[in-house]
Amino acid sequence: MQLWLNPLNINCMSNTTKPLHQHLVEKFHHYSTNELVVLNNDLVKSNWGANKTAFRTALISALSNRGIDLSAIISTEDGFTQIQSVPVKLSENKLIPIC
Image 1 (cartoon, rainbow, N blue to C red):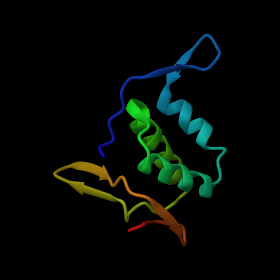
Image 2: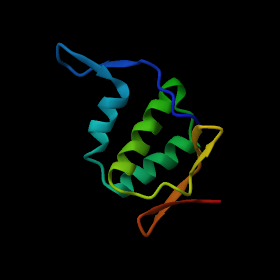
Image 3: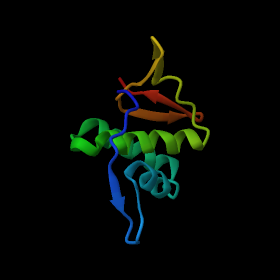
Image 4: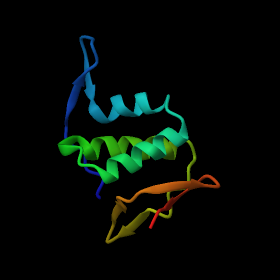
């Protein structure tokens, strides 16, 4: 999965709109790390439609902002960063792919 976001906006019940990604990052800030891991696994296993990328990117951002080690699911090839879309578990502050 590449980190490309569509310019989707969500009305946050105010006079301003903000990108869906930013809205989700703000909401995910309040989730526990375990809740974020469970949400990741649900996103991977189900088909959330067109907004799946925005949800998953915001979720990965929230985990990264907490200092969670994502190195087991991230790779860079030809200058492009890719994040594996796999179920994970949290072990010693690191996301580990579940086979």
